[in-house]
Length: 220
Ligand code: DX5
Ligand code: ZN
Image 1 (tube, rainbow, N blue to C red):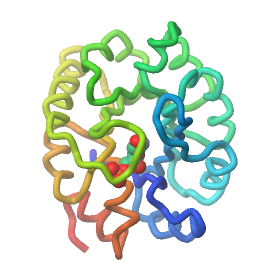
Image 2 (image 1 turned 180 degrees about the vertical axis):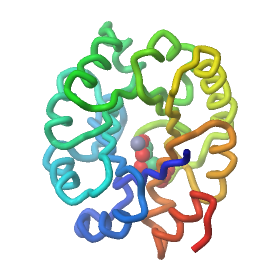
Image 3 (image 1 turned 90 degrees about the vertical axis):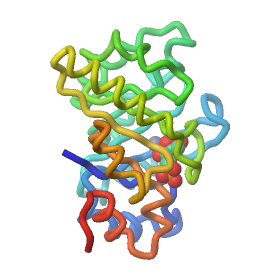
Image 4 (image 1 turned 90 degrees about the horizontal axis):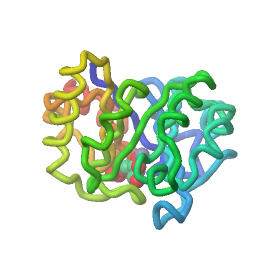
């Protein structure tokens, strides 16, 4: 199954409600990027914006935390309406904290837990946690900004992760984020991706609905 998750990072913040309405019917998931200016060199938005998005989104809200110390904030994002919460493995490991405990907490709060890694982190570093996650987000650009160029090595990383999940009989969802477009959606799905996140490809388009259809491999 191929799910499409528009990232509101590329939406028009002055007209966020209008932009979410443009994709509400066509998207499967609404992707919300939280950046702290510390783990990544950019600041996006926090709880009030996530809460506002949750009020009008008719699809599950997927919160991608690009922050240090995610364990301090996961409960508040679930309260804000997140159905899926992911955080960066490399952030938590660098802090000496246990990713498994944070994944368990997200699940106990009633949301689906996910782990994210940047393109320079070995996929095998995820393997100890695969039993604890519902999904893994493989970044296909370095986290921090929308509109970057897709990193081609992502395909191999997806295949490595899919092979490990299959070897262990795990029903793992693989999400890819960064530089995703109609052009690479089919190849990503064939490599084993289930959730395609797209910011600029969707929200900078004249017709976001037809881009989403295109990413599903359909035409409108
Ligand atoms: C980047 C974010 C992405 C971003 C993707 O750090 O995690 O979700 O919105 O933007 P595009 O699709 O424009 O590369
Ligand atoms: Zn993201």
